[in-house]
Image (cartoon, rainbow, N blue to C red; front, side):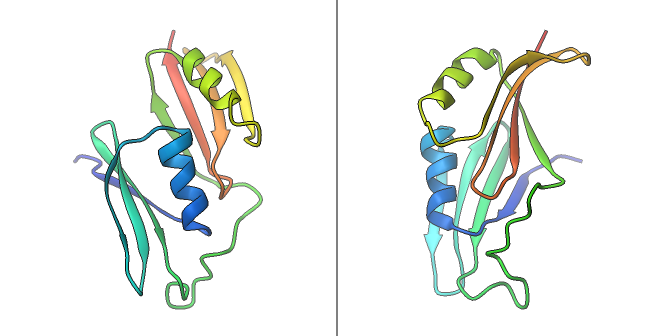
Amino acid sequence: MKLERVGLRVADYRKSFAFYHDVLGLRLKNSWQRADSWGALFFCGEALLEIIWFPGGEKNLDCSFIPARSKTDIFLTVSSVEPIYQRLQKFGDLEVVAPSDQPWGYRTCSVYDPDRLRIVFAQPL
């Protein structure tokens, strides 16, 4: 079994695209804007990260709903969290958690995306 893609339904496509492309610096594989959906695929290690927005909602799902906190985190293993933390600090309107050593053997920092999904950057100690 191999994880190929993680799909995120987003409330605001433009904000999410800017976050994943401009803030996190993920490389774009492709994107689309059709009448039924707008989306983008980003390279993320050996998997793809997809953001998708449905202009009319997906069937009865209200895609503009943003929970107070998501039950899901995305963990990205990196060689060093410090440069990422410094990069994130340049974007003043982000909720960024400073690097800290975790008891489970990683140094982490994190940031929340526009839909309150926590992105954790983890560096093995």
